[in-house]
Amino acid sequence: MAGSKAAFARARRSLVGGVNSPVRAFKSVGGSPVFVKSGKGAYLTAQDGRRYLDFCLSWGPLILGHARREVVAAAKAALERGSTFGAATLGEVELAERIKGAFPSMQLVRLTSSGTEADMSALRAARAFTGRDLIVKFAGCYHGHVDSLLVAAGSGATTLGVPDSAGVPKPFAATTILAKFNDESSVASAFKKHKGRIAAVIVEPIPANMGVVFPADGFLEYLRRITRREKALLIFDEVITGFRVCYGGAQTLYGIEPDLTVLGKIVGGGLPLAAYGGRRDVMSVVAPEGPAYQAGTLSGNPVAVAAGKATLDLLRRENPYARLERLTHLYCEGLRRLAIAAGVPLRLQSIASMLTPFFVEGAVTDYASALKADKAAYGRFFHGMLSRGVYLPPAQWEAAFLSTAHGKRELERALAAAAPALRAAARGR
Ligand code: KE4
Image (cartoon, rainbow, N blue to C red):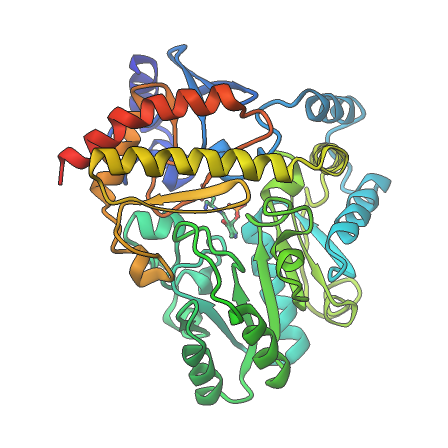
């Protein structure tokens, strides 16, 4: 850890909080963040040379593990041809065609450089198309650091206790109406109160930014029905679930067609690339087709596009989803067994290859129940695992992930570390 401690002290002299994204700072779990030197497969190597089995996987992009050979080769070859042109390339079209193949609801696509940018742009398209200003979001869901959506935001905003960020003008926040995930009546009352003024409902169809939470039976169908009836748009933020819960994301799993979809993380193969898209009539409001301006110097960057294409091609060819689900199920079963033995309340919620161990009794169905989780117990579990060479997301209200580089050996190693780590979590109770 010495390497990381010295690096952190040095970093804090130049970078805000020593990091370039708040959740990396370990504020929620305590201690000094690990500085990473490299990654390969299921493993990270820290600045001090220690190897860690990685279940954070850069918060979701690395479904194929770190530095997958074919992805690296594709990005390298693209870089050799030039890193950026600020001009149209065929590669962007090929990636957009692959996205449309996986998400038929995305009739037209626009590539961006981050999930936040894609979310922000999707909101602008929805407002331009409907001529309405208001957006409904759900407490605990996170859609990037979009000004107006930093209201009861999840992920790092919850972790740092700033779900309503400073610096967001009140009029911006006032365009966001908060509803309760899995609570149809909260959505109905929003539409009743703001009749004819709601442009869209934006939702993580399977929230991961309050930890992994499942949509109640019929809830997503309800959102589809009420938005259609009220002539508002339904936006699925699939930055995490896209290509993660299955190749076609949550909308394929649940058979729901949103009007707009936001993708990120996996779609860029670990490089800065995200996307938004949807109905042709809606997306046609975006410049240069329509009046809603949106742009980006590095949008559709050729190196990121190459990594994204290589990733999607490998996922289509290998179709690892069933194996990943089985492995994740084994991991969760092991954790449940060990938590009982350690006498610590643990509610494991997982789908496909993403999971959250909530240190709480009972089901977590929304933000309020997620916040009941014992953050300090999670912190003790986190450090118990870290000290034994297993790197988890450094925050309770996040999702952990498995990759195709994880196998039985990795599971045995993680569960061997989890036994004492869960006892440590229990001790503090
Ligand atoms: P980015 O701007 O970080 O690429 O994407 C924002 C975003 C949008 N929508 C969803 C559902 C997301 O989960 C995210 C980003 N996720 C967080 C972790 N849950 C990124 C980690 C970080 O902030 O450092």
